[in-house]
Length: 465
Image 1 (spheres, rainbow, N blue to C red):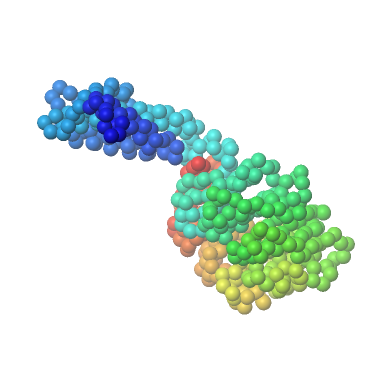
Image 2: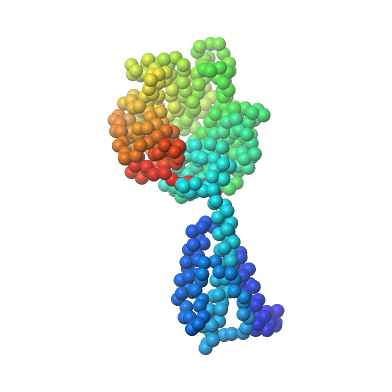
């Protein structure tokens, strides 16, 4: 015979009620609950209470946050008195839940006391920061970096962001931080600090729940990029003067567990680098790879009409310059080349910016032969851009937004009923859906979203949780 079977009827009811209260406390924990949850819960209790038969002279409707009613013990079974027992049980349930709701609501009110009009917690933003760059993997899932160097992730299209930063990053003061997001669950983050000559690299394969760490003996990290889950490269560089820098390239073939130095750029007084080497002069903006062997390093040189574009055919060990057929306007402008983006083994786009001093023009150079040669398309006034595939792309000068559907051959300025300001980032996952960092008001940068290809934008009241 169990202990429960030895209870009197009154003790049995008391024991059940105590279990009920404990279960309610566990089930209706405030952790992870938003205010809407408690509103829905309270509404359902009201509806349930209202649907029960009522005794004359006795009222059981729930009032907003009533005090708990004392429990009346007594042995009862369903039958002629079952209705009274059910209402009594409901009163106990309602009282317990309402007390829990009251406490939970107070906690949530305190936690959200400093929310702004967009629904974003100012307190959390002060700690985590606002989104400064993002990469959406699809319509719902994406990664972002904040201006306070926190790594955050969303699973609802940017409505809510969860801090998934490695703990070491939260306690560091990085001098440089770079990321690469290969899938919705696979990502790398690398950062270096001013107090040492080591770059710390963290890799996750479970959306940031756990991170694996390794280190590379180099001081300033500029880029980390992966071709697939195993093969990747790391670019480290150090400015020696305004227009010259040393650099080192590392390569991994095991997902970042170990890294090997494969190329270096040392200080030199020569205008041209030694055969097989990258130049000391100029600034390297980044590298990208078509496959494990073929890749490009791009950058800028402070001489009108000069290009910094190098290609490797051995995975990054040796490099050779690649020329472009520039337009007359480009030959008289300072050029900055961004590493190419490939959409297939043959199709790719190489963005080239020409700064004339009064304006910046963007031209997509395209390839149909895997980067062996590049053909110039039509220039557009732009400082920020994004490409979806070999045909669809968007470009903006910060205020006006243009789109192409033929790989940059033609550009159409998108008319919008809103006035865009300070666009600094574009990220599209389809020809209709995209995100931007900018503003449709004068209140400052926000996270924007479009579902019609960039014609109209809404501000997403992103919540950091």
